[in-house]
Length: 58
Image 1 (cartoon, rainbow, N blue to C red):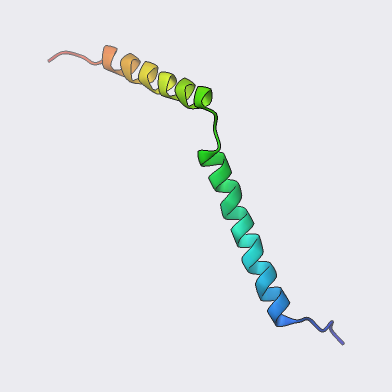
Image 2: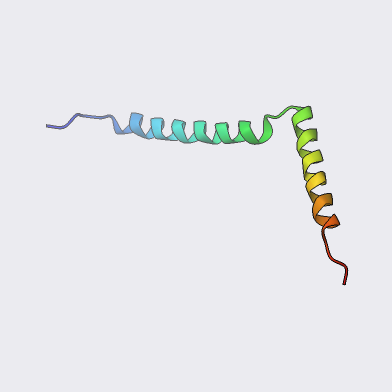
């Protein structure tokens, strides 16, 4: 015979796991220092300038 589970507890555990996953994603997306944000912005600008410099004139 299978194990008896409490469906309410299983539902709450599933919701908690989903919230934890979302929280991890938000920490990675928004939980950066000012220096990290500035470094990323500089890298973006450098890449943009590199691409703009490689364009051909018509």
